[in-house]
Image (cartoon, rainbow, N blue to C red; front, side, top):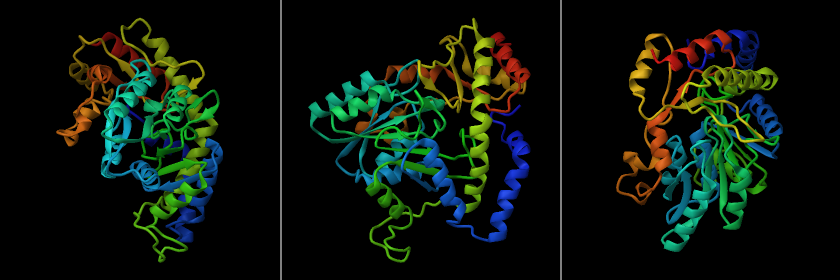
Length: 375
């Protein structure tokens, strides 16, 4: 059994993917080919924003937005404590200070109440120039932008949506990638929409930022790539990956999102009464199910359970075993001084189960039964 079965996906999509890649080979237009532009247009239309700029990976996508916003030394950006390292790493890499905020124990996403408390605390301290908030759509579920967006507007803060895991999710029909002032996603292979390598994208309705990001992504180019008007980076989605993503995007829209929703319902049904805390979906929120993550009773030996499941051929993952503020990279900095008890508890109790659109009901029942019986 695969945790996320990319091999099965390729078997299903093989004729279309092979044809798309073969076309790129024949054209020999491997960098910035027309498939890249087509994909950007398709993604922007799907998300419902004016601009989509593809890039080398999801981490670069975050970095490029921070560069366009001029985030740097002396600035502070608020980031959820329960997330992948890149959400805070990119802030620190620009010379700014990430300060971490606790999450909601049901959704795993940024807690709006704790966010406002942290904003007031930082402003009262007067040590940093508070510039922005990063909200992460963890495990496929959008953060609570119905509350987070007004809070950011109230205090004049930029809002960056980190949709690396959330592409395809929505709130009352408004899709991930359209929230905040700008948004990013990742096309890492295991993501809801993944390529066969690295890739990422930025979404925004702001013309000025879009132009800046396109410039920064290609060595700070001006009118052409040999006219360098600013210092930039080299971060491009190559044409082969764009061609693959075009095929996958169609499958994603046509049936994959619906399929993972069905798989999540099978899990819900099979795991009822198990003593596990199952994933929560607020009213009006749609998850793209990057992960199906349960919370184990605190008395459960998670390592032992994982070992037993592995012995049965069932892979599991822990996202994430350590809070951001406890990462060694932030030791000795203000970033390490965070009070996030919910995150710390989640890091001890979460467990992600196999989840993908090609999972059968029999496989689902096998996993659920093994987890429930813990034997």
